[in-house]
Amino acid sequence: MCVGIPMQVLRSEDGRALCRDRDGGETWIDTLLTGPQPAGAWLMTFLGAARDVIDADEAARSLAALAALDSLMAGGTPDLDAAFADLVGREPQLPDFLRDQKK
Picture (cartoon, rainbow, N blue to C red):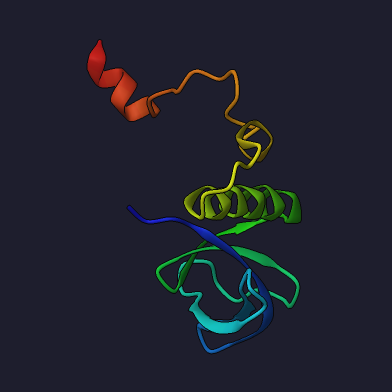
């Protein structure tokens, strides 16, 4: 399974961006799919590559969910309803292309 990690751009150059990770470290991220991004922009990254440009609110929600998972894996008891509030009370939906196949 691949988990997306939100990272904030510090600077961009030649198809990559230096980004701050959730632990405060810095890492280079491939930005060929998203194009160059200004300092301060948020990227959803997977395996060292940016896949989407996201806003600060989405980054905060994703970071809270990742923190809750970290706590859970360490034996803690995080408030999962708060960390995954966007999923509470929502039925999972198939993507359109799969829904159309069921007809």
